[in-house]
Image: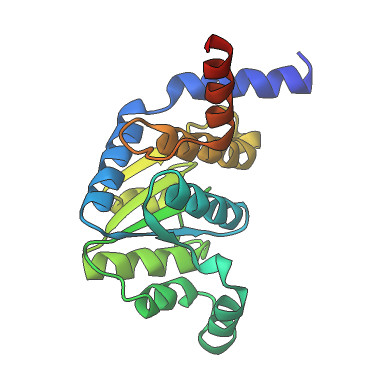
Length: 207
């Protein structure tokens, strides 16, 4: 089996193993968030930071949810890191955003944060603060889910089928999962551009 075939075979395995119930329950939490007028704060580091920015766009534009991420404001984030330290940068950003019990914190992370191994401590501190404030916590994570999985109201864990591909598979499927969510009939309120164009073309052809 070629490396390409192996990787795609593993991806197929993960698709079959994804916890569909956890995805559906996450969608329900987001629908309830929108209905009560709460805000969505999306956190991620590295690839997760890129996902956070993209997901904020999709949740705002497609699902009509007020959403933000700290990594979209480089000036504020780096000022907090410089003045207060990396470990508290996300927690203090949430504090500055006046996080409330009506809000949701959503994490994209491979390991989910781990204090014992000093990994993604900023995520751990942010989730501790979220819990103190009574906000709900969601996550799409890999491995055993780390701190995120332990404190989340709902957490989608990307199954590990090859320990050599934990990070690429987790980050790939994080994008799949949030795109599934914003496309979900319960959550989507705005048609996406290419779907809209395709439907217009189909209607013109019929007419």
